Length: 337
Ligand SMILES: [Zn+2]
Ligand SMILES: [Zn+2]
Image: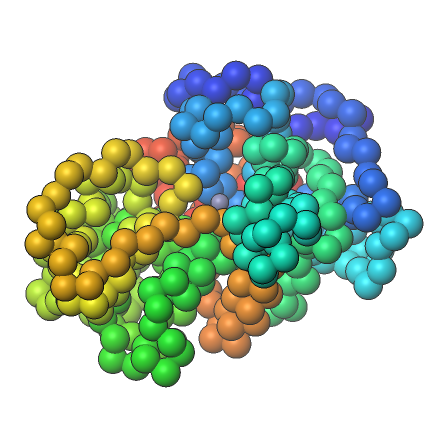
C-alpha cells in the first residue's frame, strides 16, 4: 500500500477535493519503472484536471505530472536505467507508436496517448510508475526540487519557443512577449535571454510575477493587458485567458507568430481581421515530444536555468493547488516528500 492524493470527482479546488488515501502501490508492467517520488511539481493543468476543465479520463485519479524520483524496481524489458537512478516522469506518459502522428515523429499529437496524472495515475503519491522509454534522465546539476518544474513548465516553454518559428540564429535581438508569468514563463525567459532575446512580460501581480520578471532580466514588464512599448517579433501566452489573444495580436509585428502554451483556454473573443492580417499566425502547443524534453534538459543544464520554487509538504497538496489558482506562488510550486 502507499499514500496518495486521489480525486474522485472534479470540483473547485477551494473545496479541497483531493483526499489523502491508502491505495495499492502501482503494478509495474514489463516495460515500466517503479519510482519512489521525491518531488512533484504542480502545474496549471493539474488545476484543469481537478476542477474539470479537462474531461475525466480516470476516476479516481492521482494527479501530478512533474515527477522526480529514484527507480526502485524495473520491468523485465527495461534496460539502461538501473536501480536508484534518478528519473523524471512528465505529462506525456505513453504513445501508441503506430498512428500517423507517431510514425511522422509527431508523437505529441498521438491519438492514443496517455497522460500522467490524467489518464494514468501521477505523482502526488509515494510511488509512481512510467514506461522507461518515456522517462527522462535529469542532468546532475539540478536538485530534485529544482528539477521538478523543468518537466512540464520547462519543456512546454521550450516547445513554445520552437513553435515561434524563430530559428536558433534568429534569437539575438529578437523581441519576445510573454503573457502570464508563472512556472513556465519564468523558465522560458531564461532560455530566451540566454539565446539573446529581449523579453517583454505582460502579467498581473506586481509583488510576485512582475517582480520575478524584473529579477530575471525582462526588458520591460507591464500589466496583463498593457501594450509593450515596441512591436513584438513573437509572443507566447501562458495564461489560460482567451481575452489575451487579441491583446497580444495587437502587440505583434507583421509576420509574427503568437503561440498559445496552455492545454485549456477560456473562449477567445472575436476580433477584427486587421489584427491577424500581415501574415500574423496564431498556433497552439499540444504536449511535447520526447525529443523536445531531452533537448530542453540539455539546454537548461548548459545555461544553467535556475528554477525559483516554492515548496509545499506532501500533506498540503490541496493548499498548493489553491495557492496556484489564486496567483500566490512566485515561480513554480513543488510538492516535496
Ligand atoms: Zn500514436
Ligand atoms: Zn503541466
